[in-house]
Image 1 (tube, rainbow, N blue to C red):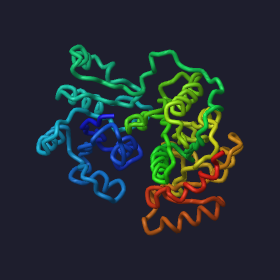
Image 2 (tube, helix red, strand yellow):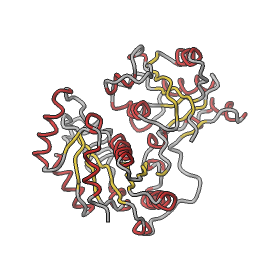
Image 3 (cartoon, helix red, strand yellow):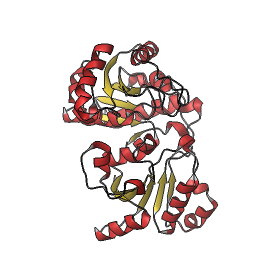
Image 4 (cartoon, rainbow, N blue to C red):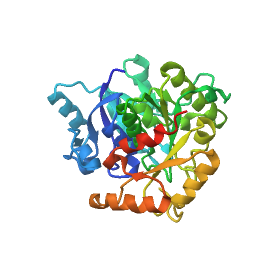
Amino acid sequence: MERVNAVVYCEGAFDSTYGKTAHGLVRFTERYNVLSVIDSTLAGQDAAEVLDGKARGIPLVRDLPEALSLSREQGLQLSHFVVGIATDGGFLDEAVEKAALDALAAGLNVDSGLHEFISDLPAAGQYLETGDIKIRDIRKPPSRRMHAFTGKIESVGSVRIATMGTDSAIGKRTTAWILVHALRKAGQSAEMIGTGQTAWMQGAEYGIILDSLLNDYISGELEHAVCSAWEDKKMDFAVIEGQGSLMNPGYPGGFEILAAGRPHGIIMQHAPSRKEYDGFPGYPLDSLNDQIHIAEFLSHKPVVAVTINHEGIPRDQIDAVCKEVEQSCARPVLDPLYHGADALVPLLMKLKK
């Protein structure tokens, strides 16, 4: 696909889990050239350096005028404004609404993954009438007839790997992409099966926007996405992005991925420093071993390895934490952002038929 030049809006949230969409786009995307990220609280810094400690030339800027000015200085035409905040419940708050309308007034196309839609705003109507500007609300339910589960997935010859997690906003999608790239590097054909709006924004060719679907069709749509990828690519591996977590009280997810995705193996993403479920104080995080047991019980397939989210862990302690978790869960453990995922490839190769 042809990349377009974009600014990502993440005001006041880039250094929090609410900025996970922006984080994904700063780390990797085949859909956009990310020229800058809007967050006035961190303006002047490099977004990738703030995120992962390695600068990539993506500046954090104060506002849209600065983003537009910066693109002109670079001799680049900014064309897209991407909402990079995952708000509670996906609601469109006043700040995001104003920022999106300002972007439309500046002649930019707007992409949003929130549950409330930019295109439904009365003030957005004038921009849609001309057809010169596009608003893509990624979580809008599909207008086509949806697919029900058929069992056709059993004919797919790819090894299917699911990246599950012990919590929401814990790095399942990022690990899935790193795993796809590691498999490709090792000479294996691999496709990302996205299940959320950020994976779509990153350019996943196959997948679903799970939050936009009627519950009756989630399993069928996921099966259809995996089958479509197999029919087109005949890939060795299909890596299915997880959603939420099996035990998160507000965002329980993953049941459909295990039941309909029929994975041959599971990678479990975990943040050792988290004590409570994301966004739900007073709800203690169920133990890693309990969640591994639940995933294996439901799927009848192995959790092959555990991948670590190093939030709250000093860099010089990451290796020690991985070893501690490894001893506790009796499975290989690594931090994909720190170690990469090459070491997981031989483990997944054992799952090939």
